[in-house]
Image 1 (spheres, rainbow, N blue to C red):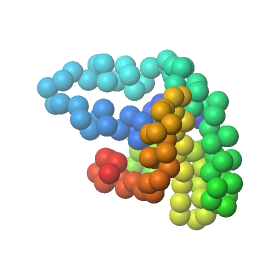
Image 2: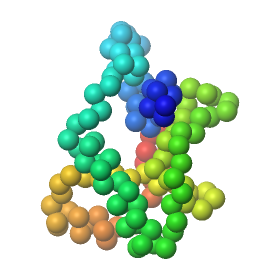
Image 3: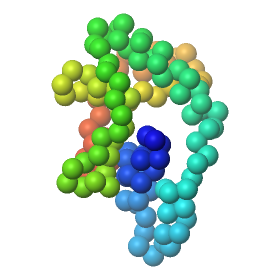
Image 4: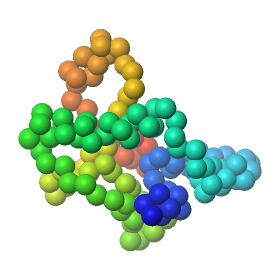
Length: 126
């Protein structure tokens, strides 16, 4: 049901292709991709799905934060906009997990050293 509801909502996963579409570009391919693209079983996506719970558990252990599972949030004012974070943290935080199938150990250590916080401004992550 979640996937069925989500395919009719603009989320971070598909927002950029809508915003970046040129007015002179026919919308047929975009609509096809947004409404009917069911091929979501690439090797990377399956890896992410299979490891997401483990990654959240590790996050909880390392930060002492509890992650509450959640579903799809739909904007009341603009019901075509939504978000489906991987979990909620406290009252004003959320988590979006990305499990990367392969990354060099040097790069992983670089990422580990950095605190990362993103903002969404006009639909773009900064």
